[in-house]
Length: 162
Image (cartoon, rainbow, N blue to C red; front, top):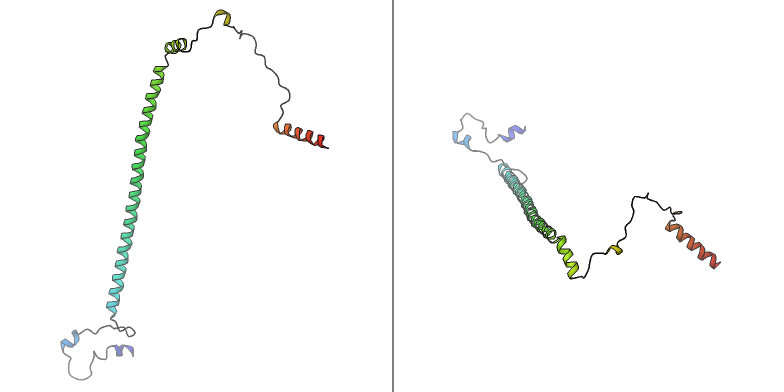
């Protein structure tokens, strides 16, 4: 009987009663194969599980921190690009204003007369075109394709050779 084997030293036969101190002694639960206490093995397994859990949590926190750092860098880069874009837009606007201010027709006419020696056309240099007549369109013959022209050229070469 297996139960009897476990408790053989715990129970005694005879008429004398055991002392209380004998009952309080705990028999160690040693593994027969390894000779180690089962509680020690369970504690070691629990310690390994806790350490593994802590390392996993630490790794996850590090990954989250790294991703947050990447996101922060990208946001900073976009803010820098936006500020650069506003600077370029403002410089473009100022240059457009300068161009508009410099395109005074009187200044252009004075420059053309003085620097380039130009003058306004005389009456005999002016030709008037009557645009009230009906628009006439010119019809073009057959539209030829470039491919057709190339084929005709190749045929001509072949005919000359043979």
